[in-house]
Length: 281
Ligand SMILES: Nc1ncnc2c1ncn2[C@@H]1O[C@H](COP(=O)(O)OP(=O)(O)O)[C@@H](O)[C@H]1O
Ligand SMILES: [Mg+2]
Image (cartoon, rainbow, N blue to C red; front, side):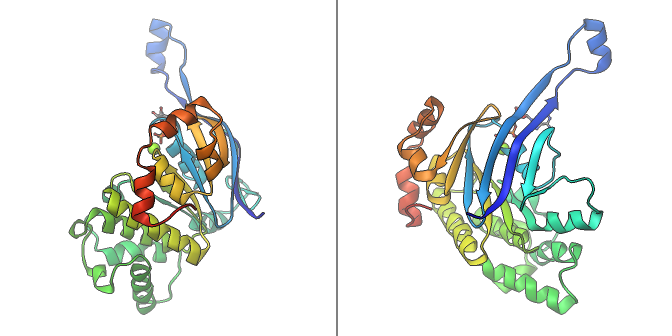
């Protein structure tokens, strides 16, 4: 097997203490939250690993550490065997690595600048990472990206608010693709969409994975979505990985009581499968 990313004993501890003075006066101890606690797993190249767990279980915190937006308190993120947070790297080397790791969020409205036309939104990463020679090449690449996500070249002149929720999510997918990433963290990418639109976006993500060989960390609280998307599933509870298995095994023979409970409360597994026309990853 060909491993792309490995999380080794990953931890994130947030300091939730009151201000120093208040602690001294009221003799309160420091307070910490282990939002992510000794989590280890890896993702094969070209595959999708789903992290499931209820709100507050630490999914987004792992996502931020996976793309280098947040430094782990303990443990490591290894990309192709190399420590993502290796401090001996130069700034240029860091940028090259960051370019390969992208993220898509739940609410594209919040992550797309409303004052920019779609063309500028997609051109920005091309410029930041120095991926195009001139304006003509930039425009060509923007049109190619729009085409890859099922939008048209003329959409480059429109603003984010002129699109539907599903289309806006396509725009953020196009922006994530702009820097030619190997790895995309999808943090609840379809949670805000209607089920039918959700299915179209999931199909797009699967097709892009096949075409471009992308590796996904797919975060959701929705097991119905996971079943059609993921090769493996990890179940997160209060910052700890309570169970990890290949998708079919996890859904058919969950080991932990917590996973069993999650599966029981996921009545839409069949409906998503029907709408996407997909069975399993
Ligand atoms: N920057 C932060 N400072 C303090 N606590 C945080 C911070 N970010 C997240 N948390 C806390 O960490 C826990 C996990 O959050 P998060 O990773 O966002 O969970 P999820 O994405 O699974 O809903 C939550 O209790 C959240 O309140
Ligand atoms: Mg989250």
